[in-house]
Length: 96
Image: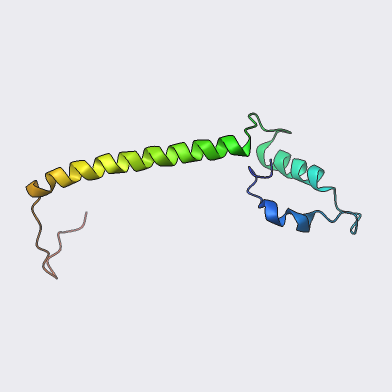
């Protein structure tokens, strides 16, 4: 839940000092309160482990890289067909 809220796990220690400051909620209850406030429900609909999220992210990244490589290859084959356009300062096409 904290990850969906965008909280940094390394900085959660700052929030977890309810022993010293009794008016604060314990950290798990505080995160549940923030989650309910933002998303309007008590728990996430789908809970995925961080390892699975990392695998999905790596797979998506690899797919994007493969698509870019294919696009770059098709662009290289069409480069001989491209014609460069000479831009002269002050000669701009009319806007709109």
